[in-house]
Length: 329
Image 1: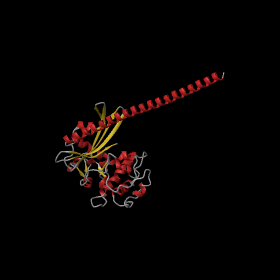
Image 2 (image 1 turned 60 degrees about the horizontal axis):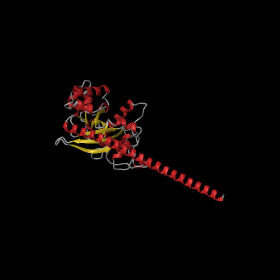
Image 3 (image 1 turned 30 degrees about the vertical axis):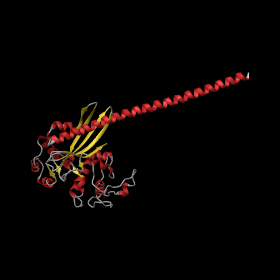
Image 4 (image 1 turned 135 degrees about the horizontal axis):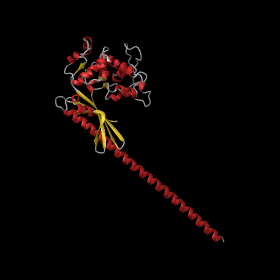
């Protein structure tokens, strides 16, 4: 009788061991299967990522070829449509959308101080007017503070003294490393020129919404004159207190028919008085000494997208196009 009981206990023990082994094998197989599936998904995402990045790079190469082979993109209507960012170009299994802007039509914030280190009052005044224009247009949605101007000055200058502009009555305090080191994550004030317009997002008070509003009006490349053939309506208006939106629109309508061949041709615009012309003639141009282009190429493949941003410099003598800045976002 005891032998039968012992035999049953032994059989039960073996059964429990077998069940435990089966469960352990099941867990191992489940883990292996999960790991394999995760690896396959990661590999597939990596493939999509590479496809999207290659599409973005292809868009950049298209832009480089266009800039190299066309002296003036503005007169080429087909390229204007292609580089508006609204149309897509099919590339293998993906596509890309390309935006090209000529930087000479924007306000260069790196010139807020001149070569001698003194404040450039003309650039400062134009930036303040630009802020006023954008605030009026977006009234109630958000507010761009005048503190943007002294904060830009502090970001560029080499000292650690917070800038205050005596001719600005309100919102007149910049920011140095003491302010930026208190943020999360902390960082230091660069005390050097801006490398890209995206660097503006590091500046005190600049949100993504503010940056999106400013992006098409400012640059960090080019000389100290605004190319009137490329400037946006807001930039044209910011040239002078007397430049109203109707006059700015007339300038834009005129250049659509034929780009300005000289600054003197601005006198042909009805309503552009002698006082307005004298106020802007020294700060505008129709043919920039250096041609810089900002290219944003967004590649998409299987629902995944990647964006490359580059700054191109076109050498007018050799007709070469150099990529002076490249970033993947």
